[in-house]
Amino acid sequence: MKEKISFLTKLFLSCLLTLLLLEAGLHLFPGVIPLQFLIYFNKYPRSEIARSLNLSNKWDIIYLDRDDGGPELWVYRPLIKIRWPVKDEGAVETRVLDDIGFCNPPENSYHLPKISLITLGDSFTTCYAVNPEDTWTAKLSQLTGLEVYNLGRIGTSIHGYVQIFKHFGLQKSPQIVIMNFYEGNDLRDEINFYKYRENQKEEALRPTSLTDNFAVELSREGLLGRYSYTFNLFNSALQYWLTLDQNASDLSSTDSDEMAEIELHAADDTLDFRYNLVFTDTVVPFNPKNEDRDEVSMALMVKNRVPGYEQKIAQTVKEALATFVELSKQNDFVPIVTYTPSAYTAYADNVKFNDPALQELMPAFSAYQYKFLKTEGQNLGYTFIDLTPALQVAARIKGSTDLLYFPVNRHLTPSGHAVIAEELSRSLQNLHLALR
Image (cartoon, rainbow, N blue to C red):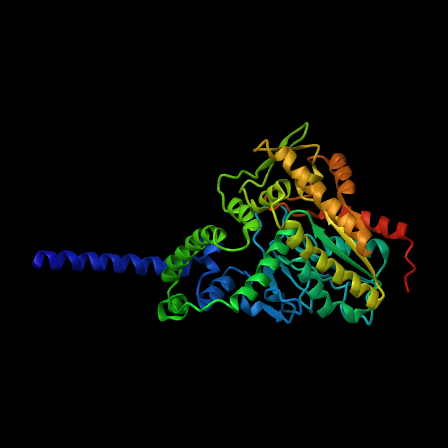
C-alpha cells in the first residue's frame, strides 16, 4: 500500500513539475503557441501574449457601428505599432499607423477639409508586407498630385469596405472612390458576411444551451483560464479540433447545403494549393505552406455551380456594390471598382500548380469573377478597371528578378503596388474626370 502511495505521489509531483516547467516555458517563449490556437485563449492571457509578440490585440482596435447586420467591424487605434507576421525576404512586418489608424504616410493626411480620392480594400490595399509610402494608394498620390487617403483594412468584406467608408470617407467629400476587389478571397469574405447575417436570424429562434455556455464560461473566465497559459493551450487545442469537426457535422444539418462543398474542401488537408513560377533562369516556389485552400474551394463551387450560390452569395455581393453606387449618387463622387488578380493569374505564363487540375480550375475562377464584376459595373453604374493585363505585362518584363508578389505571403511587393499605381494613373487620365 505504501509503495502505491509513494508511486502515486511521485507521479503527481512529476506531472506537477512538468506542468510548472511547461507553464514557465510558455511565459518565457509565448511565440511557440500556434496563432490558430491563440484566438481561443482567455482574453487576458491572449492580450498579454499578443502584446509580447507585437501582435494586434483588443487594446489596439476600436469597434464601429454598422447598419447592414454584419459581424463586428473594427479598425486600429491611431498611431499604434502593429505587426503582421510575414516570412518573405524584404517584407515589412512592423509599421506605425497614422493618427486615424490607417496605413498612410504623413503627406497623405486625413485632416484636409476635402480629399480628392479615397481607396477602400483589404490587405491588397493597406500596407500588408510593405511600408505605408509603398502602397499603390500612396504612389498614386505621387503620380497624380491628388490628395488621397487609404482606408484599406485587412480581412474585410466588400460590405465592410462600405461601412468603413461611411464612417471615415463620406465627410471628406471625395470626388473619386476606388474600391479594390481582390480575386483571392473577397468572395470568401462575402460568404462569411452572408453566413453571419443568416446565422444571427437563426440564433434569435434557437434555444440557448446552458451546458455549452457553462463550458465556455468555465474555460475562458475561470481562474485557470485567466492565469494559466498551459490550460489555455490544451483547452484551445481541444476547441480548435472540435470546431473543425463541428463545422463538418453542421454542414449536413443546416439549410446552407450550398456552402458544404466550400467548407469541407477548405478543411481538407489533402488539397494542394502550392505552385511554382517557372522562368527561363529559375523556379520560384509560391505558397510553400499550402495556405488559403479555401480559394480552391471557392473555385470548385463556381465550377460545380453549387445550388443557391447565384441567388444568395452573388446577390449579397451585388447588394454591397449597389450600396456603393447609391452612395456615389447621393454624395456626388465617381465610383470605381478595381480588380486585383492573385499571383497565379498575374503570372499565368509561368505558373505550374502542384495539382495539375488547378491549371484549368483557377483561370476559370478568375474569368468568372472578372465577368461578374464587369457585368455588374454595366448594370449598376460603376467604372470597372481590371488590373490583370497591366500586372501580366509587368510580370513578363520583370521576370524573376523583380517579383510583383511575395512568394510566401502572396501579397503585393512594392513593385506590384507601383504597377497598380501606374495603371490607375493612366486609367484616371483616360476617364477625363472633371475634378472640382
